[in-house]
Length: 406
Ligand SMILES: *Cc1c(COP(=O)(O)O)cnc(C)c1O
Image (cartoon, rainbow, N blue to C red; front, side, top):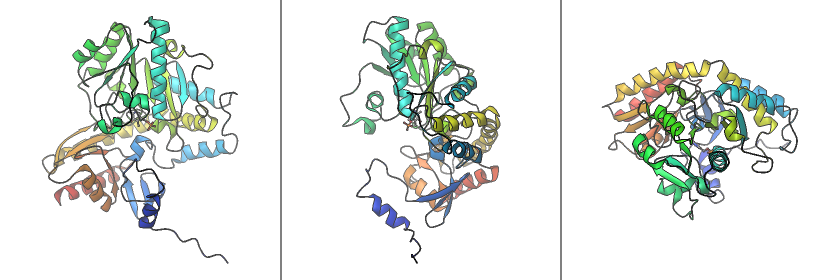
């Protein structure tokens, strides 16, 4: 008889990570062992309401049954081919994603950073081949406060010193302008500009929402200047803001969209560049690729994600519950909240620094059974799965009120 496997405690598991795991994160002291829907359970059997949802990678909840079923079905048939061969899942994925976004072509990748990297390459190639920018002179204009990922090229145009320090030399060819400033953007764009790359809402910066008219202005300016508008919707897209895409709030369609996070349904990493034919059409065999990009498991899950979004159900939930979230936060202004920004089920909440740092607030919320993540300073981010019930959302707001009052 073998003794039953002894489950290791939270403290033991955290201590075991210490010497062997790179310290590039500072997680809350909770060790998650299982999850379902909006709830996660730790190794001690404590349950928490997940108000972060994997930075929006879990928009459809943990282990969404439709997505798990699609993944299981595919796991039993075919998981990986590489792009050396065709697989029977990819056409539908690309077709459905193009149709969902109103664009023409799809470049499947895996992580968000890869989608951004791919867009940088494609925009440069488009600038040389279509726009006629002289060789190696292409520029890409980005916004201060951006978060587009962690690769060397991407941190080259970050304004976050923690993300950059010690990682140079950096990739040239980027111009940084203030976010939400059309005049600065206009001044930075010239005949060398391949693209303007921005987040329609800056997530990591603390859910920073530009003024009404900014996205329309970016669309008009880029069209006039003859450069591409590339929108990084990796966090803002796929239902989070109450629409399929955050750019829809101003009714604009960029030349290229970057999608990731929720596109993998919380199961596998799936990202994509989705663009007009003229843009992605610049790529020819051998010029770009990925061993895992467009693999059949990813494509099957991605198609199922698009299927969920096609119903409009999750966008509607985000819009309706977004009102509950906004009203709840409004009532906390002056009671520990100094300000907040929200759209759909997504909020950046600035807590009075006298009450605590974002980290401290997150730890106190954890003790109340609510998992959140600070962004920086005393700002916390709320981004629950779009499957959250109104009752669960109200209980999370109640816990926040309690923590702020303590
Ligand atoms: C998370 C994120 C990325 C990077 O995605 P990874 O999958 O972590 O590489 C890029 N852009 C935005 C807006 C993001 O939120």
